[in-house]
Each structure stands twice: as C-alpha cells, then as structure tokens.
Length: 484
Image (cartoon, rainbow, N blue to C red; front, top):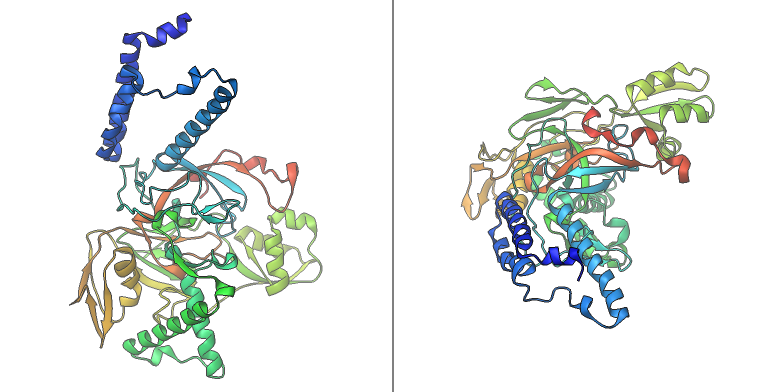
C-alpha cells in the first residue's frame, strides 16, 4: 500500500472529509429547503467512515476487463449525476433557435443560463433522463415519466426578474400539443382556433362576424364553438396532427424573451411603443420591426452583410416583400437610392390571433391593452369584459375550475366577482417585434415557468455560414446584461 493510500485511509483524514462534505451538503439542503435529502446522510457516513457498502467492488476484481469496463461506467455515471445536478440547480446551456430576439440575441448564440440568479426550481418532474428536455434523441420518445408530479417551489435566488431582463422560461402555451413532428413546436390553441375559424369561414362564404357587436356571453359561446370545431378537426386527422398530449411545466419547451412587464404593472402598447404604468419603456438598441422594402435592383452582398440580413430575412423579402429592420438599418437602406425605391413600416391590424384568443378586444400587436399583469396576493375585480384575459391564469396556471354561465363567473362552483392571485406573472416580448410569438399571442408567463437568466454568450455560430467562417468571434463571452 502506497503512502497516498495509507493517508487516504487515515481516520482523521476520513473524518475531516466527512465533516466538510456534510456541512456543505446540509447548507445545500437548507438553501433548497428539501429535508428529504437527510436520508442520504447515512450513505455519506458509510462512504467516508464505516465503509460497509462496497461502492467500488470492481476495483478488487481479478478480471482486467471487469475493472476496465466498470471504471468507465463509474466515471460515466458520476459525470451524468454531476451534470444533472448542476443543470438542475445552478446553470445550463441554451441555444437561440429562432430570430425572435434579433438583433439583440442571434440565431446560433449559445447562452450560459444562471438558475441561481432568480433561484432554481425544485424538480417538478423528478423521473427525467438527464440532459434532455422532453424527448430522447435517436429514439424520439418521451424522456420523462409524468408521475410523480411535485408542487412548485423555488429556492432563494440572488435577485428577482427585473424590467428589461432577458429571461429563459418554459413556454406557457406548451401544456398541450400535437405529437406530429411538424406541429410539436406550434401553439396548440392558436392551431385549434385557426382551424375552427377556417371551418367557420368556409361554411359562411368567407364571412367572419363582427365581434364588437356581440354581447360578451355570445362572444364566449362563439369562440368556444370555434375551439371545439378546431379540436374535432385535429382529433379526426391523427395522420396529419398526431394525437393531443400534454407536458408538465418543467418539461415544456424553453423560450427566451425580454421581460417588458412586471407583476402589478399595467402594460399598454401604443403605436408599437410599450408603456408600463403610463411611462414609455426604453426600446432595446437593436429592436426590429418589419418594413416593406421595394427594390430597384438586387441587394448586393456587401449591403446584406453590413446590415446583418439573414437568409431567413431574405426568404421573407422574397415571399412577403418585407424585412425585419432596426432603425439604423432603415436609415442605411433609405440611403441606398441605387438599390432601394422605398421602405415602409408594416402596419398590421390583425386581431384574430391576439391574446386572449377566446375574447374580442380589438387589440393588435402594435396597439395592445391596457392590461394589468397579475401579482401574487393582489385581488382583481372580475367582469365579463376582462374574464377572457385572466381566465387562463386562474383556471390553468392556478388550477381552479372556472365556468361562465348566463353572464356570471363561477370559480370552484361558487359565483366569483373577484379573484386573488397566488403567483406573480410577467409579460415577455421579443426584440424582433413583428417576428416574435410572445405574450401578445399567448399571454402571461407565471413565476413557476421561469427557468433562469442568461449571463453570457459562450459560443456563437451563424447558421447561414458553415464551418470556421460562421464563428462570430466578436460575440464570444459577451455579457447578456450589456445587450440593451
């Protein structure tokens, strides 16, 4: 036995190691307030002191193959457990999959996301394959077991979500989805209402009713019928849509947006400018809106590179005639009289796909609200004019039975004229304002959906450029808080 091995077996050394590990472990349990973890203490004691369990029995094997294979298995299991533990409570990586935050965060940016910033959630779906969100790669099957489901609890963080923070969260409307591959990432409720709307228009010669002239109860009945018709179409076509399934909160898709509205604030969008409590919110430096661009000639490559126009943007220009542009890009395009004939802001008055999907507000993506954002412990008066806005938080996120009959609201079987919220909620929007599915389309983000805060970009690769040339060197290790 070597001196190193003898030292490792020294009782004083073992007791010192056990004491340090135990103190650190107890501090961790105190932080997450999960005292079930005390059941692990006898095993920690055995590893360092009693050694009754042969944790590494394979080291004593005479078989070289057994020692070799088990050493790798041991290392792999330790790595998986360590990474799962770190991802669960401290940080995880996240890649920007779409252009909804451009030009602040770009498609192909890889983010270091801190869960300590807002406090990590305790596992809600504990039986989950490590390093997967909801689907096992290769096998393309569910990577978690839905039972048991634990309630929402969050350990204390370094701070709370602040106005204009960029935040990673679970997609709120992702509780239901179609299992067909092309529809899994699509908003199930918008899909159902859209199909129902299409069926209604087809039956009525393309005619859609004037909702502003309907009484509120009649509006609700109309939207309920649209949803029911859309759901029947989905259920009747499993070869197209697959089956309808649901996911627990922490197994839903991860989204990243900017928080533009905090609990208790009143938010309104007027002529695409966001106001909270009547005060205009500072727009991000790289905020984008869509503009119709009429060209005199093909846009040169140097101009495309200068403005950071992606292939996705070019496809949008070719198919719909518009580009998402920052204020600086608009000025640069207008200055190119040799290439550009006109640049015109896209004014889109679409109302039918705006949240709440089952209520007529007359709001659009550029003129929205005012809407009060629910705050934990705050009480709101419920009326037929606002129930569509707050129905989903009350019924889905906070688990109440809510029914509207004959112009009256019933919660858990009792008529309700007010409601006190049990969670904080947030309003999230993308910086690419005309190309972002956000709170304007699916509503509030509950606090139990908050995952963490991006700290820095650790890697960035332009999907339009392959290999080494696609690396965005200037973005590496750039702090997200500096992206305003």
